[in-house]
Amino acid sequence: MIRFPDRTDAKRGAFFLVAFVCWSILVDQGLARPMDLAIAHFFHDRMPEFLAWFFGLVCRTGNVEFSLPLWIILLVLLRRDRSFLPRDRFRQAIVLTVFLVAGSLLEHVMKRFLHQPLPFLNRDPLDRYLHPVISIKTPYSYPSGHTLRAFMVLSLVSVWLSGRHPRLLTGWGLWAILIAIGVNAIGWHWTSDVIGSLLFVGGAWFSSRLALKGQPSEYPGP
Image (tube, helix red, strand yellow):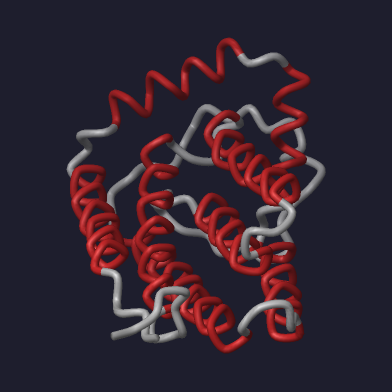
């Protein structure tokens, strides 16, 4: 009873990672800037002030000083959870952790070499009051670290819950979506920054599912 490698996950993971590379090249060439400017001006000109305050608060929960301890807590919970095969799911969590570290390093490298100007239409009303504890200044803005961390955390939560408590997973999903929208709405990132991070996380998620293979299957073997 052996579960053979699922080529679908491998193909999807490769697709998202290749799409991330291609999208990054387009952003570097400036082909996404008309879209970025149009969406940025829409939020800057039309977003109500209370939404700016709301997004300013929510997006700060995606800072490194919050997301990193949260990731460690989730890893501990996963390791101690005996309700499923820990070797199976915990291995997937380790692969996601590798992608989180690689993505975080890649983020800072790309923000130094990929020519994506920093956003200039700031609508963050908390900028003068609340500053991140951990912050590294970079000349460019691509990709969005907040979006990357939020959806990587969502991926790890999905592994931890493993099909249980769908409402809780929905809540985490809503949190990640609000951060992805919020960093764009208050002028922390361009839309193309967010799209790039989502493509990377898509590749990380499907690649991590390959770690589930080789475990006993519900279908009898020959």
